[in-house]
Length: 518
Ligand SMILES: Cc1cc2nc3c(=O)[nH]c(=O)nc-3n(C[C@H](O)[C@H](O)[C@H](O)COP(=O)(O)OP(=O)(O)OC[C@H]3O[C@@H](n4cnc5c(N)ncnc54)[C@H](O)[C@@H]3O)c2cc1C
Image (cartoon, rainbow, N blue to C red; front, side, top):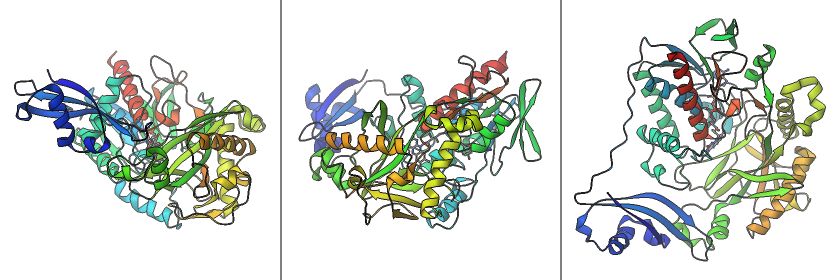
């Protein structure tokens, strides 16, 4: 049995294996030569003190202790096995496919976008303000919205075992083993595409299929059962249909609504991205910028209540960039990402507030359950129209926004193609602008120096999750009125983020395997 130690260390002590191992060996009263293996199993930073501390949990294996087993995944040959159609190759769809293979089913993934290599070229065109390919962009394409992202791997899932297995699956496909013990693991946009490619190789090697540039336009329902999907003129049949289409596939919700498939409205959140100089966030969080030599790029999580409405930071990207995440140049949608080193000079985060069905009551009569979707589209299109589209985003200095002052210019930004000065009160609905203003004031009390004109808000952070849920039975995970139809992931309303979508896809695969067994 290894010895487990909890160590509270200075950032410098924790930064090198020799540094913490010397302390661990002394604490245990053993000699360095007796140590056969030493590994970190958990690492977090406690920055509440004037000098931040690093909390390490380490395992020390001495000579004679049994070593930990390497985690291995077995993906058997599924050629000729029962076929299941998966619509969407994001984390939910890919993890559903991997689990199906383990359980002896043959997944066929239909993905509207391109593979990661071609997709990168399409994304460059967006950054240059040239064009958005409606099928290949930050939201659509191999790996889904998670591929060109920060790759933060948080989840609120209570099932630790499932979470660890999802992380191990990523390590098996090339992610750094560090993600297994970091308190806030992340992969980075420079490494994610390679991992996604490896997942594709696993699926194809086992006999599964991934077809790109295959946009699903309809579902074939016979006798109350989903039996396949249409990609234009082609029908692709399967024993079950998994819908893993993410939160940007408005056409999928519209198609389901037209067919009379039951949908539900749900609350979600919208707001802006805020961008600060990273050095300022380091100084606020670590009480000095010198600590950066030993500590990770500083992050923050902020929450507040303003007039009964939650306002919170979302998807914070330390050392990252703000990206144009729209699926058309008629929309303005921003998000954030970072590379593995998190070394850009900026820190950004979504600052968003709850949006509830009563906020767009005027749209219910015309649009019914799709009213939230229409509201989101209207806000995104209004912002784009104010700045002329083309990927340009409206922006305002943060302290000016909070004080209701006009900004005359903007600080430098990571955002491409371009940010232009405007007023948050013009591009945001009033209730959102007011909630954000109250939230920022409260964040300024929690983090002294946060509300500054060195920072700016950029709009619009609108796709935090989906305004529509595709319902399913709690136990079988199947749609309640269309048999064999399995909605999953963020677009269906059951996940928010890469790992929770992956876990949800895994669960759906298990439910399908269970059903098809009987
Ligand atoms: C820039 C950015 C940064 C992000 N950073 C993080 C982060 O750091 N950590 C985190 O946890 N989350 C992050 N997210 C959110 C995360 O990416 C999503 O929560 C996650 O990808 C949802 O997974 P999903 O599989 O449910 O859907 P998606 O990833 O959206 O995948 C859906 C897939 O379905 C495909 N599709 C849609 N319609 C059709 C159709 N009709 N036919 C065929 N295919 C279709 C799409 O092309 C897409 O590939 C980020 C998102 C963005 C955009």
